[in-house]
Length: 209
Length: 87
Image 1 (cartoon, rainbow over the protein chains, first blue to last red):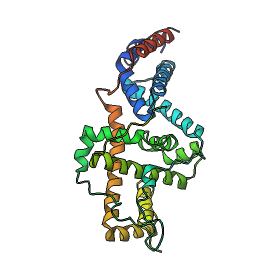
Image 2: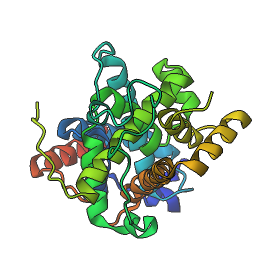
Image 3: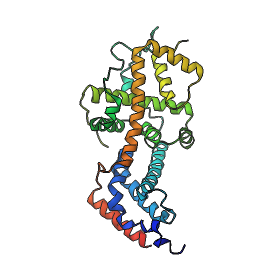
Image 4: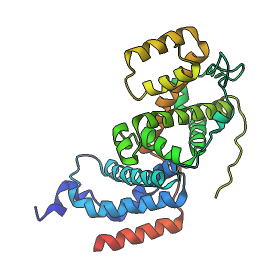
């Protein structure tokens, strides 16, 4: 046991190679979920520090890469939770899709699709689209346009794949509230993809703060 | 009361996350049978849901990362790891 460093699995751990082997991978994942250079770099740094502390407990059941990505995901989740809690909730973000009022607002047809505002026919094969790098590029652009508080909860659920009950508990939101937030994000993403990926509208640059 | 397209949209979204109640499932099924636009909307939401999971998994599995750490940051991290692993 005291020779754990000479065990096969411990021998595979070589922290001096970590930055070279995993730095860009971790940074890419972190950036795609946090949409911010310095937050992503912080997450990578925290991951390496945590991995150093925990390296004795890495028993080689998964690969070193999987282990490292797992630690990163925990750090990302912590950051996203923090973002959600610290962004003021009275700042109500009306999403562009909601501003378009695709549904009738009043009258006997209230809640029905307005003429010419319904979803268009995409004519895309979903299986093929998942492989398409253009699609993935637009997906990321559309995700990045979500306002911060909604983006945080949406990323936790759909990309980090955190459990809904856990999200409700950690963020102090009700299940109903969560479903509404998720749907608002999904509506916005769908519409953003429709406009840019399907209909070819150029994406306008957001002002970066 | 029969649900509107907007309400059905919300229920379709929720069906991705939780089991709808029997009344909800019936309402959704009936509405989708009659409303082509909502059928389209529903299939697009399902596609999007799958695409997001795939997007997340791909990012974690990718051989070639799509971003590179700036050299200065890379150096800083390497120095940090070297320092801390000697501690």
